Length: 112
Image 1 (cartoon, one colour):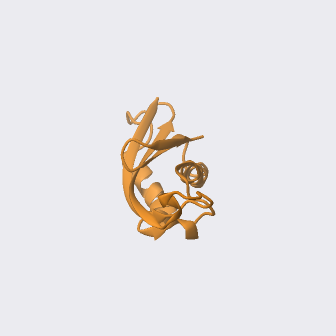
Image 2 (image 1 turned 90 degrees about the vertical axis):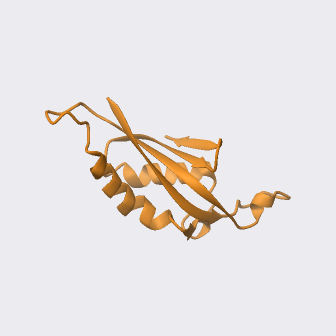
């Protein structure tokens, strides 16, 4: 079974080598993050406690991304690279099967 928890964070970034685009300039977004975890339903009726997902995501991801300049965290913080970065940070700590990052409204990238 799959379960998911959503988060939001605010951050700034610019896209490297996006010649002529306004996205080449530093700007900000409110991002939405969905973390999907998979596993069997245990005796307690849960795959994983949503509080455990929140704790891990806050420690491993939000502490490094929320209200930060993402270009100081990763080389080229496109939505695709942010999603992959988050997935790699969470994989050792939970059975995450995908993360989806919305950059504002209507635009998203999903890893893996």
